[in-house]
Image (cartoon, rainbow, N blue to C red; front, side, top):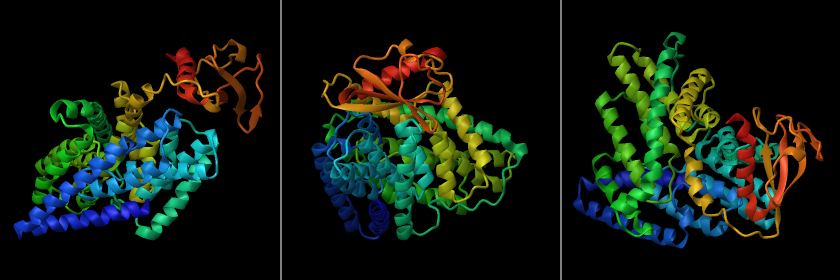
Length: 486
């Protein structure tokens, strides 16, 4: 994953130089067009051969962990690597983090298959690989681990937690040897945000939540929009952003890429409000075009970049109105990155930890949490769903009618406070067909259940079912568990 990140970084630098040379000699411009057509053709072939390398790859990882998507790890690994380096490195508004997660999960799957692991052990290794991928992409091992638990695995299994953390720490150690110990987004902001101005954090969180819902709704409709407007075979849609990036690179080469350099530039130079608004519109529209095309690339860093621009724009407007000191604008840039991701991904813990690790300071956890939780609550009140889970549902629904294989697999169902399972005896629960409750994890103890065993809050139910019925059974049990609180 470190090589993936390094090649993208170096490639983007070469492309920026090429666009600058194109201003001096038109033959460089011809070369740019020719190379981009070759990149488009290569990615079209790769996507046609293996459609599951399209996009970020996180929905594929979620669906694979549900047991309803079987992928050949090597076919995914090398195609995602090559396609991602070419597309993201060419300056499209795509992130390397989602692809890094899928690359890591593919490595984990390959390792599991080498060890002849199946079922739970295989899924744990895939999860650990995913955490390692995000850790290497951002030098953020804790956030990488929490992302797997909060966004992909959806429970805090100790086995997943410890294995993922171990892999993430190892990946971070290797990545640090490539890129050094400086945080990915090392922004200097020495001023603490005053408690008297926390009203701005609430207002910013509300704004981020509303814009987060808009982002979710547009992103989920992108495949339909491409089918309706572009009318090309799906594997050729990548040519659309590859052609559109040419004028952007020629006119504004400094805006190319996922947005890491743009975020850092906001600390050195404060653009006028209209320029920030223009950058936000440009990045919002073209990131949608880039991701909707299906080219290998994610939305992780583009979301953080859009959040930074929203925070910067809000801060500049408040400064111009005399409601905020100018030196606090950079604080809002950082808080808004966490808030926008927390709203869109509905993963506030990951958002807070991610920005903390990326910026490299623990001094501002309180305002980060206020903005993140406010944005999360606004999205929740507006019926927004986690974006990666929503993207995965389309694939999962196609897998609900799979035939039984005869191979048993395990499901872990956490019993949260408010669940309808609490204080019920095992015999009183309407368990789905073809399932067996084989054990209950209660703290450090494992109980062998019988009919009159009472389920308590905090328990983890270990259920056995057919491998191909995992998702169906899990969804039914989660629905049963939530009936009392609905």
